[in-house]
Image (cartoon, rainbow, N blue to C red):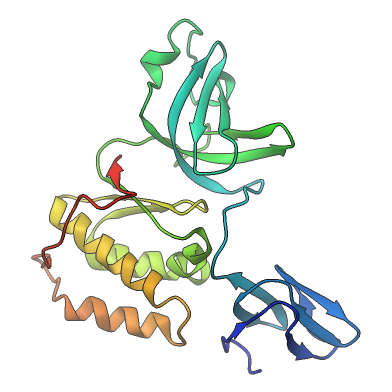
Length: 242
């Protein structure tokens, strides 16, 4: 397989042969063969081989950015639903300013959404933080849900795809590894166009030359100064206000 070429493989299928290839996520080496562990799309870059799964659930990793909603408040922090098997815990010590333990609800209330960073993954649960710049409570905009395994395609290499969308729509976009995407623009029309572009990426995530196809799709929307929007239902399941 040529460098950067993509193909869909099944578990147990040989992807490439050669000791020069380095196995990454969801693959393993057997002799000179690099073999698939998961059903998904192969990505080979600089002799590094990995599989981006097409289906499956999100498993949090340390350092991941995730988007979730406050579902409970304890005496020393908040429980965040991010779509995983367990809720994440945000300690009061991991917010960017001092909060009195008697005033936790005033700082973050039930139903409010946050961008947080996973800083520890334990058998008993996930600990998160929002002390770093760029993390915190979300205000305005919309949150949409996508397959977590399509997130790398939405982000693009070194953030190239997200940058392409931002430049076209003038919206702020934060992509959580858990498959939640926050979109905030100057108008609902800009946000809905951004949503449509992200959905286009998700629907075409397994094809070659995706960036070029997305660029053409964006141009077909004729955004320019006035964002053009094709009418659609805004109350689809998995979407909520930020």
